[in-house]
Amino acid sequence: MINFKELAQTYKTPLYVYDFDYMTKQYEELKVAFKGRKSIMAFAVKSNSNLSVIKHFANLGSGADCVSIGEVRRAFLAGVPKYKIIFSGVGKSDDEIREAIERDILYINVESEAELLRVELIAKELNTVCRISVRVNPNIDPKTHPYISTGLHDNKFGVEIDMAKRMYIRANNSEHLDPVGIHFHIGSQLTQAEPIYESAVIVADLVRSLMALKIELKFFDIGGGLGVKYNDETTIDPYNYAQLILITLKGLDLTVICEPGRFLTANAGYFLTKVLYEKQNGLKRFVVVDGAMNDLIRPSLYGAYHKIEAITDSKTEATIADIVGPVCESGDFLAKNYSLPILEHNDLLVVHSAGAYGFGMGSNYNTRGRSAEIAISDGKARLIRKRETFDDLVALELEFLQD
Ligand SMILES: *Cc1c(COP(=O)(O)O)cnc(C)c1O
Image 1 (cartoon, rainbow, N blue to C red):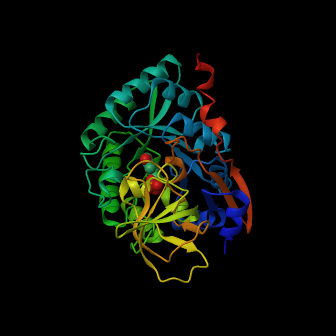
Image 2 (image 1 turned 90 degrees about the horizontal axis):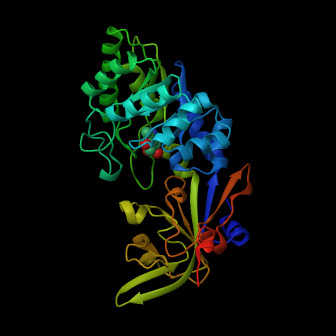
């Protein structure tokens, strides 16, 4: 049991707390599910990009799936070996591509024909060969929230099968490109296995037709997306997930790459916030807390549900309230119509499942400094990111002040 009250006293609120032992457990469960096959787990850094979190996974043997050169640099800083670093994303700049090539990472995940040509040009300028994979958009409905669906032609990600094939042929004929992998990632918070299986079938078939053209790939990159329980969702069992993928790869000698983010971090994380006031507008009850949408935007952005636990001495009966923050937006809430007893000033709320897409999606809106982050391992807490101060927030502007 984590002593949230003590953590809030020591480190103040709002505060992010991550259970590193839970992260380890999740990592091992997924890794073991793929045993019997060569596999690399490449932690999706965007889900929680704290350096100590990346390092924790690197120590377990994980690679890193990165979607900006900033994330690639984080992976290097945290000690992820370069041969386990992947760079994905629909809009890589020339500078990002150049740096990724110079850093000699495992491969660049290419998401359009135009990007393939850019990568080739830059590799040529650098007089080298760039390893690539192509992100295939299998046009399968992942049955998740539309904002986190990525594998439909309506979504901006990846390329159609026919285009992918043309790109592999082009890459194979290039002196500056080495096609080594194939990739798909159809969405996040996936709770049904069928769409993943259907996508894997389509992509594995493409691998076979490329083999017929003497284009031999080494890596079958199945992306991330495994859903987790926020409330009462049914989730995909990692073992069954691995089995489904492996069935599609019969007869193919490929290393599986998996890019889990949320699965590893979501339920390892807690967001701690303190009650400031109770207020009532007509019949509507609000609990005003010191954490806000700039700290945790998922409820505002996706209507996401987070379980919220009140640590209080209040013995009153629970009634419905909206839990809202200080930010000047009506969209600033952590929960709507949530059942809670009447709370006192300084009572603590623990927002569960906040380890993925929490801190990283934070902002400084309303000139609010971002929270501190704490790691818990073996029952011990340690600071892994300081709370941002006002001085941090104005540092890049002060020199431009004029009379
Ligand atoms: C976001 C992303 C992931 C991780 O998604 P999760 O749902 O957090 O597992 C993996 N791969 C790519 C390419 C991504 O964009």
